[in-house]
View 1: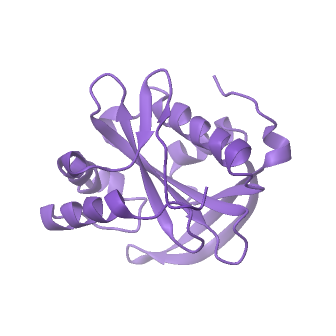
View 2: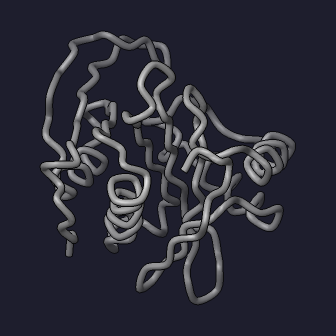
View 3: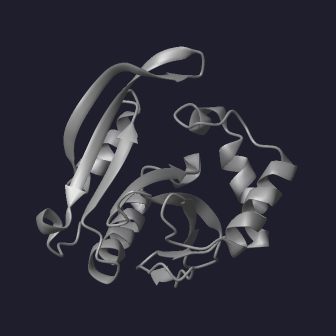
Length: 188
């Protein structure tokens, strides 16, 4: 799906959808949480930054090679934003995509990220014919490591002190999953 559209995905408890202006406050709250930002490439988020980001994602084209697109993940019952999943279709080979996951602290530990990413994986492999998905994670981010392992991703690499982030050299682990390894299974 590289036409710029992103059709919502509904699961039992969630809806994966485009960001909307109403999401700016919740987005800012989790992006501004130091415990969440610790493992990300940002250090906080102002109201203006949140509003600008959300406005950009409202109209951004989905699936453009070389561009990140953030999919909003909301509670299906009340449409409250709980987190987001970044999808980066690689510029050199659009059948490959990188994923990044961020959830608010209050939405963690209940299987919501697993449910959301599993649903997105299904679309990426079945409807979009992606060949391979990968995620790059600081191995100290044990919750993210556990999420991708639970989803069937395989650890392919561990680069020691290869990323300069937050004033220190950090390790980077790469997890990947091939379409043929996934084969339509559903994570419970």
